[in-house]
Amino acid sequence: MAEKILRCLDESFETDGLYISAFNADTGHEEGVTYLWDTKELESELGPEDFKKFCQVYDISADGNFDGRNHLVRKNNVQLIRIEEKLLAIRKKRNQPTHDDKILCGINALTAISLIQVGRSLQRPDLEDKAATLVKKLLETFWNGTSLGHSFYEGILQRQSFLADAGALLLAVTMLYETDESWAGIMSLMSDYVKSFKVNGNWIESEAEDFQKVHASWFDHPVPSSVSLAETALTRVALLSGREATPVTFRRPHQSDFYNINALMANDHFHLYTTKVPAPWNDIPANSIQKRGTPETDCYDGTCRFLVDISFIAFIGAPARRALERENIMTLEDLSKWSEKEISKLHGMGPGTIPKLKKALKDNGLSFKS
Image (cartoon, rainbow, N blue to C red):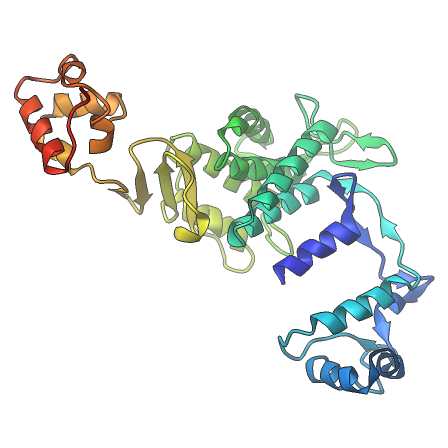
């Protein structure tokens, strides 16, 4: 299903690296005509054997389910790729509905987020690369260094700023940063920009010179609200930057489902992985955030566990332990890359510590560098 949605995005919505807004429901003032099928047409095009297979998977009838024709609705998940490809080719030859070619910044940012998520789930880094290209294109098109535009149509940029656009774009940037720290600068810049929409403790959707101030929505359906996007993005920025997130209260289910994801993160119910290199997303819980650094840990619900064996430092004094941590010596393998003389010179490293370190190295088949 995810791959078919990706294909639909590429074939129907993508244009010049960005995604248009929508397709009309009607073609030539007749609703749904491009997508509807007469039973006799299906039987003629498919032949008796394939038509029978098709009817076992799709709800097909002579009376149809929409103005006497059939809008294709599945009854089960049986794969019919060859037959579906044949019908899709036929459908593409029909008159097509008109479409809304506006490029909306926020919707494109949400598309980038989706590409990142599906890339992680399907283990396809090319999709995250595509998301990065999309975000760069959005910044080139809508960001002027101080504010973010809203829409682009026929060469005209609508410069009015909206929290929904800013929150969605920052959220996408935070996800890209998890894999590529070169996004740190724009993440910091966009974070400050999103915060500018909060006035006297209240989130503002937009404020124009010729119109009254519009307060932002908290309602999460059918898409994440402006407030949820902004607060989730800022929570992620804090966690990825090594700062504490501010705990928040959970809100009513269904109406605030996306906001409650932010609440999970802010209240320490997401795993925060700190690793030297990115961990495979399929190897860690779905409720996880990643950042680079040492020591390598998994922090969750007020407790951090080490991801590597650092038990050898438990037997040395605090000054010596801090000396090793300052040099990012977190494993015996790290320690073996140093000479005994180099370790002895570290501030806080007492003479009684060296024999303990040598023993720990020897017990694990290692030694100080010659």
